[in-house]
Image (tube, rainbow, N blue to C red; front, side):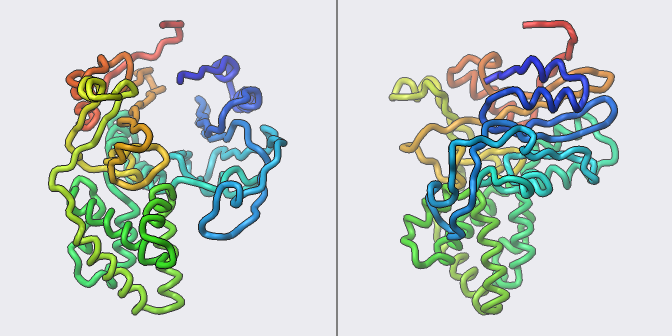
Length: 360
């Protein structure tokens, strides 16, 4: 929801900001900071129990993975990144190098760094940014992990068509082929686990693609090229046997979309046009927050639709523009929602003026 912290809104400088961040007892979050003196930062806030590592096994339950007690970390011990040397602070639901890899253990489960790496890459490509260049970044559908994986392991992919794919997920057939490759690699790298169990682990293991690339590199170092070539070619063959539909749809579900009438009135399907869990533009078959696979799971939990896109221009224009796929911008019925979601896919934006005066 729209959580507004009065002390945060009144903060005039970095010290005021830190003081405001020490007040709330809220769920964990990472909050960005910027001021007119060109200082930038991100700060971790929230209620974190003290942890200690108790296992190094690749798979473990949450109780096995960390030891917990009821004592909470104090606000001053939570990580802060202030004026980093590269001039950029980014947080995209991932383990932030230089921020979360220092200090106390906060969690044992992180989302991959792919979006943040791609955001920084696109930021560094442009000398001077404006809201339009940030719109382009928000709409980007390039899978940086796929690009890096293929560059690394192309010599062991036997001339497969994916070797020439650059990671642009708008090429949906290549996107699905790569998704299949990752799925089959997970199965083949952990043959001691039943296939169904491995696929479930993969879907609930956000870092599974990066972890598998690290495992392959380790096998390449220890067992040599023959192992890497064998497991990749075996996985590609199994992936090619998967029958993906040429036209895939995304299920955009509303919280009222239960039952035959509710599904007909409030839910919709839109053609998949690229994007994944790890691209900046997050668009995937399965939008369940905690899962990673592309399959739609109609029988498990709720899916949500595309995330909001928002740019705040604190320069002379004093404006914000973006697209929020909820509430005030459409009636929660099929045709109206479809219009907004298509605008979101095309990258169309609304614009509002920022005012110092209070408003509804």
